[in-house]
Length: 130
Image (cartoon, rainbow, N blue to C red):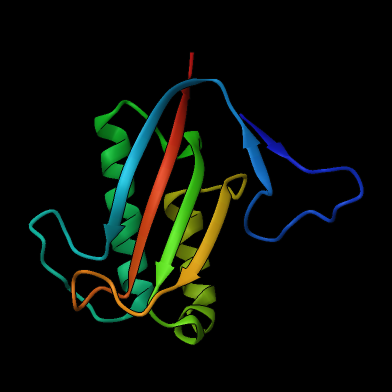
């Protein structure tokens, strides 16, 4: 896996502009902040992000992949201001569970998610090297 940084562009903070990778692709559906029994334990955004990331790690493990294999993530949040305010806690959870930022990422505010209590949904793609 190789993060892409066009010549003359500043390095982005917290994500990569693009990623080039070769290997077996693993697609992770949108993960929200509930546990394996589909139970929410918090309505706090940072807490739901932590659980969604734990869920992503679990799906990756089921595929024989690791967080280091992540190449792309799309985050859907219901409140941009809440997301920005929770930035330090979200960053801490991300560093603890995922560990790196060389991932092409997008974040989008949406009006609602399918589960009423969900405040975040994260899709991910990983590439396990050949």
